[in-house]
Image (cartoon, rainbow, N blue to C red; front, top):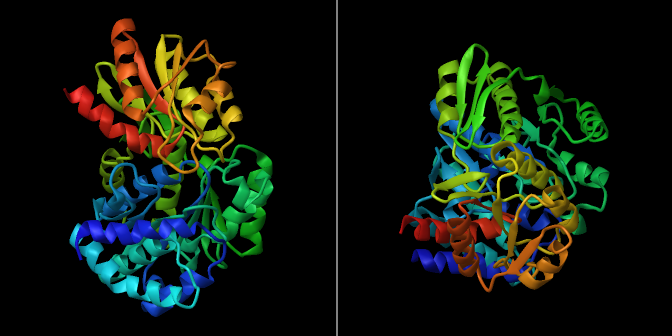
Length: 430
Protein backbone atom coordinates (compact mmCIF):
# COMPACT_ATOMS: atom_id res chain seq x y z
CA UNK A 1 0.00 0.00 0.00
CA UNK A 2 1.28 3.47 -0.92
CA UNK A 3 1.30 6.29 1.63
CA UNK A 4 -1.30 8.39 -0.20
CA UNK A 5 -3.58 5.36 -0.41
CA UNK A 6 -3.24 4.85 3.35
CA UNK A 7 -4.14 8.49 3.99
CA UNK A 8 -7.16 8.18 1.68
CA UNK A 9 -8.44 5.22 3.67
CA UNK A 10 -7.94 7.11 6.95
CA UNK A 11 -9.53 10.37 5.81
CA UNK A 12 -12.24 8.50 3.92
CA UNK A 13 -13.79 7.62 7.27
CA UNK A 14 -14.31 11.30 8.13
CA UNK A 15 -17.71 11.41 6.40
CA UNK A 16 -19.21 9.14 9.07
CA UNK A 17 -18.69 11.87 11.65
CA UNK A 18 -18.27 11.36 15.37
CA UNK A 19 -20.62 9.41 17.63
CA UNK A 20 -20.31 8.99 21.41
CA UNK A 21 -19.66 5.59 22.92
CA UNK A 22 -16.74 3.18 23.18
CA UNK A 23 -18.39 -0.02 21.95
CA UNK A 24 -17.12 0.25 18.36
CA UNK A 25 -13.52 1.13 19.17
CA UNK A 26 -13.41 -1.57 21.86
CA UNK A 27 -14.56 -4.15 19.31
CA UNK A 28 -11.98 -3.02 16.77
CA UNK A 29 -9.21 -3.12 19.39
CA UNK A 30 -10.30 -6.61 20.39
CA UNK A 31 -10.09 -7.74 16.75
CA UNK A 32 -6.46 -6.56 16.55
CA UNK A 33 -5.44 -8.11 19.87
CA UNK A 34 -6.06 -5.26 22.36
CA UNK A 35 -2.63 -3.64 21.99
CA UNK A 36 -3.64 -0.87 24.42
CA UNK A 37 -3.73 -3.43 27.26
CA UNK A 38 -0.03 -4.11 26.76
CA UNK A 39 1.20 -0.52 27.10
CA UNK A 40 1.70 1.91 29.99
CA UNK A 41 0.20 5.38 29.72
CA UNK A 42 0.16 8.92 30.98
CA UNK A 43 -3.36 10.05 30.04
CA UNK A 44 -4.02 13.76 29.54
CA UNK A 45 -7.40 15.53 29.28
CA UNK A 46 -8.48 19.16 29.50
CA UNK A 47 -9.51 22.06 27.29
CA UNK A 48 -6.24 23.97 26.99
CA UNK A 49 -2.58 23.08 27.41
CA UNK A 50 -2.92 19.34 26.69
CA UNK A 51 -0.56 19.44 23.74
CA UNK A 52 2.13 21.53 25.42
CA UNK A 53 2.07 19.41 28.59
CA UNK A 54 2.21 16.23 26.49
CA UNK A 55 5.20 17.46 24.49
CA UNK A 56 7.14 18.47 27.62
CA UNK A 57 6.54 15.15 29.39
CA UNK A 58 7.42 13.20 26.26
CA UNK A 59 10.63 15.16 25.68
CA UNK A 60 11.87 14.59 29.23
CA UNK A 61 10.97 10.88 29.24
CA UNK A 62 12.88 10.46 25.97
CA UNK A 63 15.83 12.34 27.48
CA UNK A 64 15.64 9.94 30.42
CA UNK A 65 16.20 6.99 28.09
CA UNK A 66 12.64 5.67 27.89
CA UNK A 67 11.18 4.70 24.53
CA UNK A 68 8.23 7.08 24.61
CA UNK A 69 5.14 7.10 22.44
CA UNK A 70 3.10 10.25 21.90
CA UNK A 71 -0.45 10.55 20.58
CA UNK A 72 -1.81 14.05 19.94
CA UNK A 73 -4.48 15.82 17.90
CA UNK A 74 -4.95 17.68 15.72
CA UNK A 75 -1.77 17.80 13.63
CA UNK A 76 -0.44 21.07 12.22
CA UNK A 77 1.21 20.31 8.88
CA UNK A 78 1.82 16.55 8.61
CA UNK A 79 -0.74 13.90 9.58
CA UNK A 80 2.03 11.73 11.04
CA UNK A 81 2.62 14.30 13.80
CA UNK A 82 -0.28 12.61 15.60
CA UNK A 83 1.67 9.40 16.22
CA UNK A 84 5.28 9.72 17.39
CA UNK A 85 7.97 7.78 19.21
CA UNK A 86 10.80 9.71 20.85
CA UNK A 87 9.62 12.87 19.06
CA UNK A 88 9.90 11.21 15.62
CA UNK A 89 6.78 10.83 13.47
CA UNK A 90 5.62 7.36 12.50
CA UNK A 91 7.48 6.43 9.29
CA UNK A 92 5.30 6.35 6.19
CA UNK A 93 5.98 2.67 5.53
CA UNK A 94 5.01 1.70 9.09
CA UNK A 95 1.83 3.74 8.89
CA UNK A 96 1.00 1.91 5.65
CA UNK A 97 1.61 -1.49 7.25
CA UNK A 98 -0.64 -0.59 10.20
CA UNK A 99 -3.41 0.55 7.85
CA UNK A 100 -3.03 -2.62 5.77
CA UNK A 101 -3.43 -4.75 8.88
CA UNK A 102 -6.30 -2.89 10.60
CA UNK A 103 -8.43 -1.59 7.72
CA UNK A 104 -9.86 -5.02 6.74
CA UNK A 105 -11.31 -5.25 10.25
CA UNK A 106 -12.89 -1.81 9.78
CA UNK A 107 -14.49 -3.08 6.56
CA UNK A 108 -15.60 -6.26 8.32
CA UNK A 109 -17.35 -4.19 11.01
CA UNK A 110 -18.90 -1.88 8.42
CA UNK A 111 -20.70 -4.85 6.86
CA UNK A 112 -22.50 -5.23 10.19
CA UNK A 113 -23.29 -1.50 10.25
CA UNK A 114 -20.64 -0.92 12.94
CA UNK A 115 -19.05 2.20 11.53
CA UNK A 116 -15.57 3.17 12.72
CA UNK A 117 -14.81 6.91 12.60
CA UNK A 118 -11.52 8.44 11.50
CA UNK A 119 -10.43 9.29 15.05
CA UNK A 120 -11.21 5.75 16.24
CA UNK A 121 -9.21 4.27 13.36
CA UNK A 122 -6.21 6.54 13.99
CA UNK A 123 -6.37 5.71 17.69
CA UNK A 124 -6.27 1.98 16.89
CA UNK A 125 -3.30 2.54 14.56
CA UNK A 126 -1.47 4.39 17.34
CA UNK A 127 -2.07 1.69 19.96
CA UNK A 128 -0.97 -1.01 17.52
CA UNK A 129 2.19 0.93 16.53
CA UNK A 130 3.19 1.68 20.12
CA UNK A 131 2.75 -1.98 21.03
CA UNK A 132 4.70 -3.51 18.12
CA UNK A 133 7.48 -0.94 18.62
CA UNK A 134 7.67 -1.91 22.33
CA UNK A 135 7.23 1.57 23.80
CA UNK A 136 8.01 1.67 27.50
CA UNK A 137 5.53 4.48 28.13
CA UNK A 138 2.97 6.37 26.03
CA UNK A 139 1.86 9.97 26.56
CA UNK A 140 -1.76 9.89 25.42
CA UNK A 141 -3.77 13.05 24.74
CA UNK A 142 -7.55 12.79 24.55
CA UNK A 143 -9.29 14.01 21.42
CA UNK A 144 -12.49 15.40 22.90
CA UNK A 145 -13.75 15.11 26.46
CA UNK A 146 -12.51 12.04 28.29
CA UNK A 147 -15.19 9.68 29.55
CA UNK A 148 -16.40 8.69 26.07
CA UNK A 149 -13.23 9.61 24.19
CA UNK A 150 -11.82 6.60 22.37
CA UNK A 151 -8.46 7.02 24.11
CA UNK A 152 -10.32 6.04 27.28
CA UNK A 153 -10.14 2.37 26.32
CA UNK A 154 -6.82 1.96 28.13
CA UNK A 155 -6.29 0.20 31.47
CA UNK A 156 -5.63 2.42 34.53
CA UNK A 157 -2.77 4.75 33.54
CA UNK A 158 0.38 5.45 35.48
CA UNK A 159 -1.01 8.95 35.94
CA UNK A 160 -4.02 10.95 34.76
CA UNK A 161 -3.51 14.66 34.07
CA UNK A 162 -6.29 17.25 33.96
CA UNK A 163 -5.21 20.52 32.30
CA UNK A 164 -7.29 23.74 32.50
CA UNK A 165 -10.96 23.17 31.64
CA UNK A 166 -13.13 25.66 29.78
CA UNK A 167 -16.25 25.73 27.59
CA UNK A 168 -15.50 23.90 24.34
CA UNK A 169 -17.27 21.33 22.16
CA UNK A 170 -20.44 22.19 24.08
CA UNK A 171 -22.69 20.41 21.58
CA UNK A 172 -21.05 17.11 22.50
CA UNK A 173 -19.68 17.57 26.02
CA UNK A 174 -22.42 19.69 27.60
CA UNK A 175 -23.38 23.33 27.89
CA UNK A 176 -21.87 24.01 31.32
CA UNK A 177 -18.32 23.85 32.67
CA UNK A 178 -19.55 21.37 35.29
CA UNK A 179 -20.80 18.97 32.61
CA UNK A 180 -17.57 19.33 30.63
CA UNK A 181 -15.48 18.76 33.77
CA UNK A 182 -17.42 15.58 34.45
CA UNK A 183 -16.54 14.35 30.96
CA UNK A 184 -12.85 15.26 31.31
CA UNK A 185 -12.65 13.51 34.68
CA UNK A 186 -13.76 10.32 32.97
CA UNK A 187 -10.09 9.47 32.37
CA UNK A 188 -9.45 9.25 36.13
CA UNK A 189 -9.35 5.55 37.02
CA UNK A 190 -9.66 3.75 40.36
CA UNK A 191 -6.62 3.57 42.66
CA UNK A 192 -4.29 5.63 40.48
CA UNK A 193 -2.56 9.02 40.53
CA UNK A 194 -3.88 12.33 39.17
CA UNK A 195 -2.22 15.68 38.53
CA UNK A 196 -4.54 18.70 38.56
CA UNK A 197 -3.44 21.84 36.68
CA UNK A 198 -4.38 25.28 37.93
CA UNK A 199 -8.03 25.74 36.98
CA UNK A 200 -9.94 28.89 36.07
CA UNK A 201 -12.21 28.58 39.12
CA UNK A 202 -12.11 26.92 42.55
CA UNK A 203 -15.41 25.24 41.70
CA UNK A 204 -13.85 23.29 38.82
CA UNK A 205 -10.88 22.30 40.97
CA UNK A 206 -13.14 21.07 43.78
CA UNK A 207 -15.15 19.00 41.30
CA UNK A 208 -11.96 17.32 40.04
CA UNK A 209 -10.76 16.68 43.60
CA UNK A 210 -14.11 15.13 44.50
CA UNK A 211 -13.82 12.78 41.54
CA UNK A 212 -10.28 11.82 42.58
CA UNK A 213 -11.45 11.07 46.13
CA UNK A 214 -14.40 8.99 44.89
CA UNK A 215 -12.00 6.93 42.79
CA UNK A 216 -9.40 6.57 45.55
CA UNK A 217 -6.72 8.53 43.72
CA UNK A 218 -3.65 10.22 45.13
CA UNK A 219 -3.88 13.70 43.62
CA UNK A 220 -1.34 16.49 43.25
CA UNK A 221 -1.81 20.17 42.43
CA UNK A 222 0.49 21.52 39.73
CA UNK A 223 0.20 24.97 41.29
CA UNK A 224 2.22 23.66 44.26
CA UNK A 225 5.23 23.16 41.97
CA UNK A 226 7.85 25.79 42.85
CA UNK A 227 8.92 27.45 39.62
CA UNK A 228 10.32 30.99 39.48
CA UNK A 229 10.39 32.94 36.22
CA UNK A 230 13.75 34.65 35.68
CA UNK A 231 13.19 35.99 32.16
CA UNK A 232 10.61 35.72 29.38
CA UNK A 233 10.63 36.90 25.76
CA UNK A 234 9.65 35.75 22.27
CA UNK A 235 12.27 33.00 22.47
CA UNK A 236 10.66 31.44 25.55
CA UNK A 237 11.20 31.60 29.31
CA UNK A 238 14.07 30.96 31.71
CA UNK A 239 12.88 29.56 35.03
CA UNK A 240 14.43 28.25 38.22
CA UNK A 241 13.30 24.82 39.42
CA UNK A 242 14.97 22.87 42.24
CA UNK A 243 18.24 24.84 41.97
CA UNK A 244 18.36 24.34 38.19
CA UNK A 245 17.79 26.88 35.44
CA UNK A 246 15.44 25.52 32.80
CA UNK A 247 15.16 26.98 29.32
CA UNK A 248 11.58 26.60 28.12
CA UNK A 249 11.38 27.33 24.38
CA UNK A 250 7.56 27.55 24.34
CA UNK A 251 6.55 31.21 24.43
CA UNK A 252 4.15 32.83 26.89
CA UNK A 253 3.80 32.89 30.65
CA UNK A 254 0.84 30.47 30.36
CA UNK A 255 3.43 27.93 29.18
CA UNK A 256 5.10 28.25 32.57
CA UNK A 257 1.82 27.00 34.09
CA UNK A 258 1.90 24.11 31.62
CA UNK A 259 5.51 23.47 32.64
CA UNK A 260 4.43 23.18 36.27
CA UNK A 261 1.84 20.57 35.26
CA UNK A 262 4.46 18.61 33.30
CA UNK A 263 7.02 18.78 36.12
CA UNK A 264 4.46 17.63 38.68
CA UNK A 265 3.55 14.68 36.45
CA UNK A 266 7.22 13.76 35.99
CA UNK A 267 7.63 13.90 39.76
CA UNK A 268 4.76 11.42 40.14
CA UNK A 269 6.40 9.08 37.60
CA UNK A 270 9.73 9.33 39.40
CA UNK A 271 8.48 9.07 42.98
CA UNK A 272 5.39 6.87 42.71
CA UNK A 273 6.05 4.84 39.54
CA UNK A 274 9.82 4.42 40.02
CA UNK A 275 10.97 6.00 36.77
CA UNK A 276 14.59 7.12 36.69
CA UNK A 277 14.40 10.82 35.80
CA UNK A 278 17.33 13.04 36.76
CA UNK A 279 17.59 16.81 37.06
CA UNK A 280 19.81 16.81 33.96
CA UNK A 281 17.18 14.81 32.05
CA UNK A 282 14.58 17.44 32.95
CA UNK A 283 16.87 20.32 31.99
CA UNK A 284 17.74 18.78 28.61
CA UNK A 285 14.24 17.49 27.84
CA UNK A 286 12.51 20.77 28.56
CA UNK A 287 15.05 22.69 26.46
CA UNK A 288 14.28 20.43 23.47
CA UNK A 289 10.48 20.70 23.68
CA UNK A 290 8.80 21.72 20.44
CA UNK A 291 5.15 22.51 19.83
CA UNK A 292 4.30 24.32 16.58
CA UNK A 293 1.55 26.96 16.43
CA UNK A 294 1.52 27.73 20.16
CA UNK A 295 2.52 31.40 20.16
CA UNK A 296 5.26 30.28 17.80
CA UNK A 297 7.68 32.89 16.48
CA UNK A 298 8.30 31.86 12.86
CA UNK A 299 9.93 35.04 11.55
CA UNK A 300 11.82 38.09 12.81
CA UNK A 301 11.29 40.15 9.66
CA UNK A 302 8.48 40.92 9.84
CA UNK A 303 7.90 39.52 13.33
CA UNK A 304 5.31 36.79 12.79
CA UNK A 305 3.68 34.70 15.51
CA UNK A 306 1.23 31.84 14.97
CA UNK A 307 -1.05 30.60 17.74
CA UNK A 308 -3.90 28.09 17.76
CA UNK A 309 -5.99 29.84 20.45
CA UNK A 310 -9.66 29.17 19.69
CA UNK A 311 -11.70 29.33 22.92
CA UNK A 312 -12.04 31.86 25.77
CA UNK A 313 -9.33 30.38 28.01
CA UNK A 314 -6.89 29.98 25.14
CA UNK A 315 -7.67 33.44 23.80
CA UNK A 316 -7.11 34.97 27.23
CA UNK A 317 -3.65 33.38 27.34
CA UNK A 318 -3.04 34.67 23.81
CA UNK A 319 -4.15 38.16 24.83
CA UNK A 320 -1.85 38.11 27.87
CA UNK A 321 1.10 37.15 25.67
CA UNK A 322 0.24 39.88 23.15
CA UNK A 323 0.31 42.44 25.98
CA UNK A 324 3.47 40.94 27.49
CA UNK A 325 5.57 40.95 24.32
CA UNK A 326 4.03 43.65 22.10
CA UNK A 327 2.33 46.11 24.45
CA UNK A 328 0.59 48.96 22.64
CA UNK A 329 2.71 48.69 19.47
CA UNK A 330 0.79 48.52 16.21
CA UNK A 331 0.15 44.98 15.00
CA UNK A 332 -1.92 42.98 12.50
CA UNK A 333 -4.10 39.96 13.19
CA UNK A 334 -5.16 37.16 10.86
CA UNK A 335 -8.09 35.26 12.37
CA UNK A 336 -10.32 32.37 11.32
CA UNK A 337 -12.66 30.42 13.59
CA UNK A 338 -15.02 27.46 13.63
CA UNK A 339 -18.77 27.84 14.17
CA UNK A 340 -18.93 25.63 17.26
CA UNK A 341 -16.65 27.90 19.33
CA UNK A 342 -17.56 30.79 21.63
CA UNK A 343 -16.51 33.26 18.96
CA UNK A 344 -17.65 36.57 20.41
CA UNK A 345 -16.57 35.65 23.94
CA UNK A 346 -13.14 34.60 22.69
CA UNK A 347 -12.63 37.74 20.59
CA UNK A 348 -13.57 39.96 23.53
CA UNK A 349 -10.21 39.11 25.12
CA UNK A 350 -8.34 40.71 22.20
CA UNK A 351 -10.79 43.54 21.53
CA UNK A 352 -8.97 46.66 20.29
CA UNK A 353 -5.50 45.11 20.51
CA UNK A 354 -4.91 45.09 16.72
CA UNK A 355 -4.95 47.99 14.27
CA UNK A 356 -5.93 45.75 11.35
CA UNK A 357 -7.79 42.44 11.45
CA UNK A 358 -7.91 40.15 8.40
CA UNK A 359 -10.60 37.47 8.56
CA UNK A 360 -10.23 34.21 6.66
CA UNK A 361 -12.36 31.15 5.98
CA UNK A 362 -10.75 28.09 7.60
CA UNK A 363 -10.40 24.96 5.47
CA UNK A 364 -12.79 22.93 7.61
CA UNK A 365 -16.48 21.99 7.19
CA UNK A 366 -17.31 23.68 10.51
CA UNK A 367 -15.77 27.02 9.55
CA UNK A 368 -17.33 30.44 9.85
CA UNK A 369 -16.91 32.29 6.55
CA UNK A 370 -14.56 35.25 6.42
CA UNK A 371 -17.55 37.55 5.89
CA UNK A 372 -19.50 36.11 8.82
CA UNK A 373 -16.48 36.45 11.11
CA UNK A 374 -15.84 40.00 9.87
CA UNK A 375 -19.34 41.04 10.95
CA UNK A 376 -18.61 39.81 14.50
CA UNK A 377 -15.22 41.56 14.49
CA UNK A 378 -16.44 44.97 13.32
CA UNK A 379 -17.54 46.19 16.76
CA UNK A 380 -14.31 44.93 18.37
CA UNK A 381 -11.61 46.32 16.05
CA UNK A 382 -11.08 49.54 14.09
CA UNK A 383 -10.21 48.06 10.69
CA UNK A 384 -11.55 44.69 9.56
CA UNK A 385 -11.04 43.25 6.07
CA UNK A 386 -11.87 39.86 4.56
CA UNK A 387 -9.41 37.67 2.67
CA UNK A 388 -10.33 35.44 -0.26
CA UNK A 389 -8.02 32.68 0.96
CA UNK A 390 -5.30 31.90 3.49
CA UNK A 391 -2.68 32.89 0.93
CA UNK A 392 -4.48 36.18 0.25
CA UNK A 393 -4.51 36.87 4.01
CA UNK A 394 -0.77 36.20 4.22
CA UNK A 395 -0.01 38.49 1.27
CA UNK A 396 -2.13 41.32 2.71
CA UNK A 397 -0.59 40.93 6.16
CA UNK A 398 3.01 40.93 4.91
CA UNK A 399 2.39 43.97 2.69
CA UNK A 400 0.76 45.92 5.55
CA UNK A 401 3.47 44.86 8.03
CA UNK A 402 6.22 46.06 5.70
CA UNK A 403 4.46 49.38 5.11
CA UNK A 404 3.82 50.02 8.82
CA UNK A 405 6.84 48.19 10.26
CA UNK A 406 4.66 46.13 12.60
CA UNK A 407 4.17 42.54 13.71
CA UNK A 408 1.77 39.90 12.33
CA UNK A 409 -0.11 37.48 14.59
CA UNK A 410 -2.43 34.59 13.74
CA UNK A 411 -5.06 32.96 15.98
CA UNK A 412 -8.55 31.43 16.04
CA UNK A 413 -8.03 27.79 15.07
CA UNK A 414 -5.35 25.10 15.00
CA UNK A 415 -6.74 24.18 11.59
CA UNK A 416 -6.03 27.71 10.38
CA UNK A 417 -2.56 27.55 11.95
CA UNK A 418 -1.81 24.34 10.09
CA UNK A 419 -3.03 25.79 6.81
CA UNK A 420 -1.33 29.16 7.07
CA UNK A 421 2.00 28.19 8.67
CA UNK A 422 3.61 26.64 5.55
CA UNK A 423 2.42 29.59 3.43
CA UNK A 424 4.15 32.06 5.75
CA UNK A 425 7.31 29.96 5.93
CA UNK A 426 7.55 29.77 2.14
CA UNK A 427 6.86 33.47 1.49
CA UNK A 428 9.07 34.78 4.30
CA UNK A 429 11.89 32.50 3.18
CA UNK A 430 11.77 34.19 -0.21
